[in-house]
Length: 552
Image (cartoon, rainbow, N blue to C red; front, side):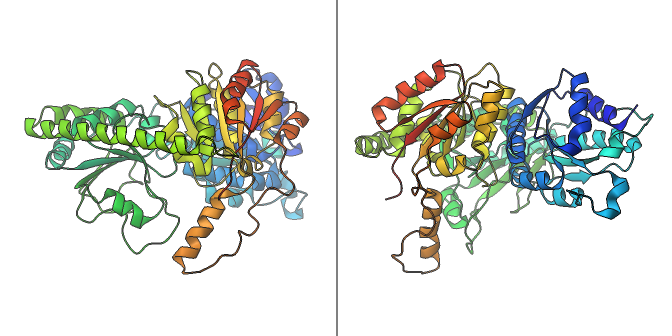
């Protein structure tokens, strides 16, 4: 048996159903063998970044290990940014790239480089088999490490001669590996800390959604009467955004985060890194008077950035379920106070809804239309059961206010801050969820990073509606430049340098047509919902370019 067959058999053994890739000469061994493995679907991308971006979101949406196949050194280089996003998203992802024949190594053949070293900074594990005998064991290790919490991408280089060497060592898996629930003593201690709090809050990462702990997070919030915040950038929905306890995301500066959390005497952190600051502050994001509980499925994230009163490493779903049962069996005075806090949260939630309504009324007749109005119309036109892939950047918070996301799987977004993940990610999301409609929201600047994804959608007949919010600028950069000038006392009335995209304006409908996709541009807010319904009604990939106002 040859190394390439062991590689393919390893994919089958680990339940792989598809590969996202960009073909190249060093990948011939894999591509040629796909004919013998019809159970594995290959999704063609025109750029390696799109392949990895699609694989990242496929892993998030399917809960399975994704596979991306790239083309040697330049192709791996093209994908590094998206691999970084997968690393920040904790996506179980096996990335491979063809490598030149190792017998030519000392001659520096065309396209060759140290692929293992290139991939190492953005992966959990990076390796290259030196012989076909190593293929099976390395693939087993790669899948194991990719799925160990915190999950993340791994990389395997595939030399062409190793793929065609003979071996007697077959493909194997690591078998079922489980993690336990927190002990009764830890549950008791967590319950004690909660019961002593008068103003608890919860900050959740993505892991509760991935771990099947969504309902337990909701139950915990309702049981203790706590507002719930999520990380600044999130890939998953770990709490329903229309729930009375939902309070949006934590800020991107320690000072603002500390101010947000300062009213609380207990903070419960669940499943994530939580704070990803953009600007430096000489303060801690965690108020020093607050008691801290952190519950994770891995030791790496526990107490990584702040000291704890209690840290628990265990499966999130059963641990949170046990904690809720323990608290509900506790002091009745605490539970009565929690009910009072829930009432206050509901009142505050209604006030926020009225505030959003007033904001919408003020922006109703703006020309060009305000992004808030555009998103309102899109939310009204979205059908039940649709999935939103969100890369609206400066409108992230507005999406959370206006759309109604009920369960994990209703919403996906990119982490790490690199743009271009939305269009590529919609590909992987639709492949993972073929029975649901996917609507991708993207800014125009972000869309241009992975515009080739439109061709992949057309080529594979993926019925994604790509909504481009076109303000013809890098709006987030303008906001950040304003902040930069304030923070460093730079008094300036200078214009924003190199942040406009209006000369010439980008024509997304023409670009879509060139890649085989129909579309329409919309500038009238009253026409947005109907345009979305028409797009969905085609049952084919479709582009909506919605012209919205830029930064004043």
